[in-house]
Length: 326
Ligand SMILES: *[C@@H]1O[C@H](CO)[C@@H](O)[C@H](O)[C@H]1NC(C)=O
Ligand SMILES: *[C@@H]1O[C@H](CO)[C@@H](O)[C@H](O)[C@H]1NC(C)=O
Ligand SMILES: *[C@@H]1O[C@H](CO)[C@@H](O)[C@H](O)[C@H]1NC(C)=O
Image (cartoon, rainbow, N blue to C red):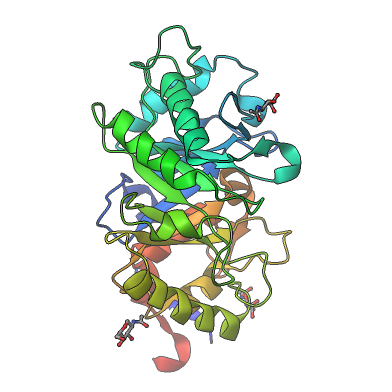
């Protein structure tokens, strides 16, 4: 069952796509960036032309009195002028840049104990990541206003999340409408960000659903994934009170990870699902391993994982037919 490109070359199509985030589109590609080993600059990923949102990771320390971050080799803090310049570059290209809170709990310490704590944390985030925040507070990204915040929580502590996100929306309202997201794992129901996902007042924008790391519902498990999809589809359509929330199928991009799946496989599993009302695109952990992953599963054409996903979402592979169907 080999696939034959009807179009003479796939590679020509790669260069013509122009990325820019569109909340209503179904072909957004989001990449996490900030933790990659020997990672390229943020600007490098924005200039590729196939990324629509970058989620900088991580704010790995957060409570009512302290915010701390780790952006790998990209910044040694407390100020990050290179990242700031790159965020401007990305934003000028129409690419959104948000900031993720959480990550591996062993590499940080985050979480609140009350709604008041959550609000205090929101105020600190505003003071740090908006140029209009308290001028006495050091601003890692200088005069850049961040586009959103993401919760990638792994310590089962949901306290204060709703209060924090509501306060962030309010504080940033004079500058922009924030993109607020959460990054749950696929077992249902989620136990790290469920409350904020369903909350009527927060109105979360995006869910980066991790279809990896859990054998029962990951993308590499054909039936497990299909069943998980039904459950989450019902959640998206009938359970959450976030009316316009979009789901991004979020995948492990590292070829050496046991949950990694090739582009052709992803394309097969997503058939008939990408037209669902809540589908918004694909998320990747993370930018560095995604560009290092060379995939040849589509007709032997060599492309990296980000290109592969952008082409998949753009419908490029639907113009391929199977040899035995000719
Ligand atoms: C907040 O976190 C910092 C850094 O981990 C810690 O030193 C401080 O005690 C924490 N404060 C509260 C109120 O938990
Ligand atoms: C949402 O609920 C309706 C009414 O119960 C049901 O018909 C539909 O299948 C549900 N949606 C999903 C995706 O399960
Ligand atoms: C893609 O992955 C699937 C599932 O692991 C595998 O069966 C298939 O052979 C792979 N395709 C290629 C071309 O490697």
